Amino acid sequence: MGARSLDDIIGRNDLLQRVERPTCPGRRCSTCRCSWRLGARDRGGTAAPALRRTEARNDRPGVISLDAEILADLEPYLESDCPSRATTRSTTITWRSAREVAGVIAERHGDAGLPAGSVRLRFTGSAGQSFGAFTTRGMHLELEGESNDYVGKGLSGGELSFRPFRRAAYADASHQHLIIGKPILYGATAGKLYAAGQAGDRFAVRNSGRSRSSKAPGTTAAST
Image (cartoon, rainbow, N blue to C red; front, side):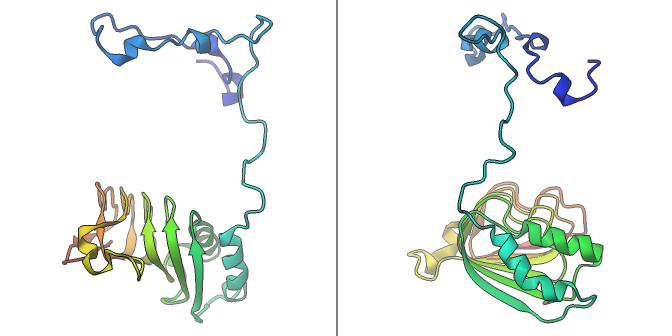
């Protein structure tokens, strides 16, 4: 296209053209009207400015990063070349995961990660997407509750375990209920996952290490 950066094409509506489908008159796409977007104008009739973000981030005010709190607790051990003391943290989680924790460990210790059992984190609640993504060696994350899609995405040697809320009505029949979403362990290379419940579609897809998975009554398990 001749553009050297995305900034050169942001707002260039003149580069967009609708593809007509005359052979498919019944398709819903034929009802879409894109002229308001392709020929965007402001109220004065002149070309509208390019639409792009106006703030650096849109973090909710007053929200403290859970990862930052965890890293503050782990800092004394991460400074050591061979941290061996297990650190347990119980906390309520709603949408944060431990992705930043895994990133810091990988940055400092590489693919080797930490010795087994170095970091053990316990959570309760409903976790958002990508809980435990990129968890590296030496990390064990345990969640009491449930989690959304992409659990353990890019798992890199860590361990994840899930069980339903202790007081959940289905706790005694967890094998009949979903506890983690889809696609789980997307692109994982190493590690283990245990879940007392069902997983959604595309379980353990695009793994790039030697992997195996098994399903016993009431559990979903995989190791790569």
